[in-house]
Image (cartoon, rainbow, N blue to C red; front, side, top):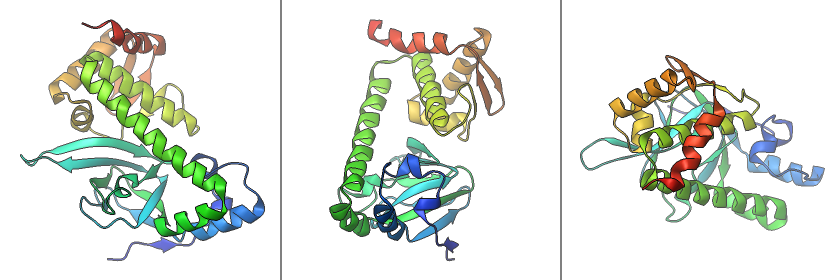
Length: 240
């Protein structure tokens, strides 16, 4: 079945500041409008791309939430990341011209499809775009390092605290609340990403609630004490 396809202009997009360079001239913006060919709708539970699929495009998430994951040898899904509106997805495909993970919609979503050969072509003329793409790739590398640190040296409480603070910070950058969020992913998916068992994730959430750090109503989380969560994360360096 063909995805629904709609022409879209970057210059009129309210997420432009998040996924495109700022301070572009009208002429540059016109060039960028040529970059985004179509929008594509992805239903909850459907894949945007799969492991091994030929890499052709990067995707700017316009609405919705995704997880990237890999099937392990024993058939489980290993979650490698969560992506939200205003973020770019698909960078994993650049290195070998094929995707190295699955991208699954956690809710109904819509993405702008940006063919990579066109990005490269326009980047040669619009230097700000080239710089922006490098910045996005660099941010992804820094994020990967952060996850490795998280899994290598943090206890369960620190991992979950860092995860919640990172999520709320990214949402706040997109104009959402600084202290409230709806978890689009399950406890099991959070555990897979953080290298924790489902029971450990649930137990740690309960501990945060008992200590007055967060309030949890099903998937709705309100952070009551940001400083306490931040102190947990900052104490990582003092761990044995």
